[in-house]
Length: 367
Image (cartoon, rainbow, N blue to C red):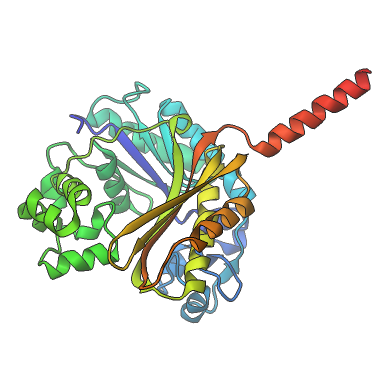
């Protein structure tokens, strides 16, 4: 934990929908839903106007249409979103060389590493200026959290939504965390939340009071130790610059265990698409595809496949993840699924082929 709130977390507000509203003035102030429009489509982002009707991210599109039949329903335009994200990430890069993008619309920044801020007053000034600069550059709003750790900075930005800034003064962490629900802490999904609820723990204060030994007994050593530390406000994870990241991954924990093999496969393919979105947002490619499956009994399996070369092709990652799933027994149900890509590089195998072809053409022309 730092002695000053110099870790910044930026989360753009309803990013995909907000980009569409900025690009098309007729959509401004109206409910907008972005996502897959097919029979199995899900909501990627809903504007705040659509959220008033109960529409939420990851909701089946059919349900969203029933809740907000008069909303504008749009398919994602990732080329446009990446361009706007690039503008935002450029602004973050001016604050510090240590920027850790989590997705197109979300990132951590280490303000100390860039000399931008070393105390609370300076950090707040940087955060407010960043919000103004983002509006000026893109017409969009973002919410900013500032704290002495990544975990708390992310919690702060969530509290700041929409279009706000929350700064958590170091030393106030436990007081702030105590009344919050256990789901506030990273790594706790619906299944773990229910497991803790049955043990009488529903708030972060309950976790802190339970003690490390009890949480280890309930959740296992790795999860229990980490959870108790977070409940006390401890989080020493550094901001990792995007070029230093060793992998990119996404995962989902499900409210109800998945038993339908077709649904499980569809979720894996959807996660693969999201993972590639993050990969491309960071300008990277990867060589190894990793599948993570947590089953009904909390046992967790990981499987990986190393490709012939780095790629950022969603079809290649999707198909590799699906092959890995074929080798996993999901009988009994699935609580969590994750897809990741490791062995990161700044190029793709396709780039190498194109480069070789260009060199061959050049040699032929010269000959």
